[in-house]
Length: 73
Image 1 (cartoon, rainbow, N blue to C red):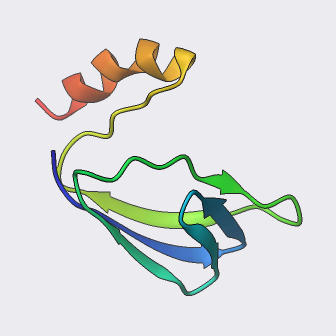
Image 2: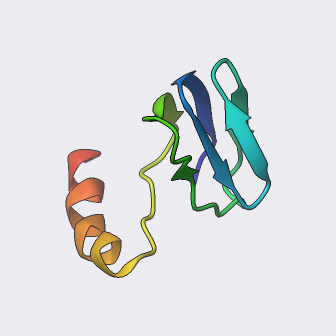
C-alpha cells in the first residue's frame, strides 16, 4: 500500500505506539497497522492523507472495505 500522513488538529488519540496531542504529526508506512482511539476528554479531529486506500480490519470495517476501494478507482 502507501504512506499515511496525519496531523492532529484538536484533541488527542492513542494507538499501539503512544499518545498523540494537538499539533503532533505522524508518518506511517505500509507495514504499520494501528488502531487509533480518541481519548475520552474531548473529540479528536485529524487531517490524514493516504497514498493508497485504507484497510479497515474490524468486523464492520471489512464490510466497508470494498466501498472504500471503489472510491479510489
